[in-house]
Length: 116
Length: 115
Image (cartoon, rainbow over all chains, first blue to last red; front, side, top):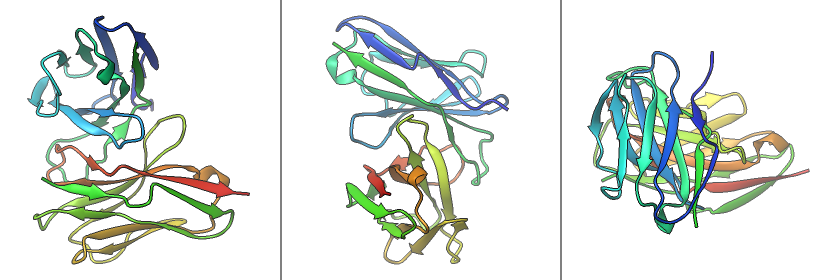
């Protein structure tokens, strides 16, 4: 079956523009995570969804970042009034369950955002 | 908060040789999970191997194996018979139970494989 997909793969924005990044998780996966990966760094957690509910948004760096998953499948990460420090790769991951400790997170290819 | 440290920013290995990547972590939890992920230039993060902290036996997946030392909080990855396709960034990651907790990653080790 299809893996996690993300679009666009690359996005260039001028400072101050709004952007929307899309994630299509593996069909049927309950859990969905967003991570931010700065250049030369490991991914850092942004937010977590269980179905349509956003249960953890502790990693969002500012109120300019907003994520949603209205129907419990596709998720969108929106960044308003982009700043240069928002330049990074944004990774989406999904996993099948909720409480099973054996769940594996499967990652998409990421969206590379460059803010000029 | 948990932290993961990878002290080797870059490593290189000759094709067909063996290489070990280091990882240490800090936690006060007794139950947790450890992972090694591979990230090639395509950016797709691929799970290489996982280890449950309650298992004393080291995990093995084909040419990949780990040396898990719980008391020392060390989790190294050994790649045997290295292949050109093993060249990538390797990230060590930690996760608390249950399954809906985020991964905590190290900064990564860039592995080069020399033909």
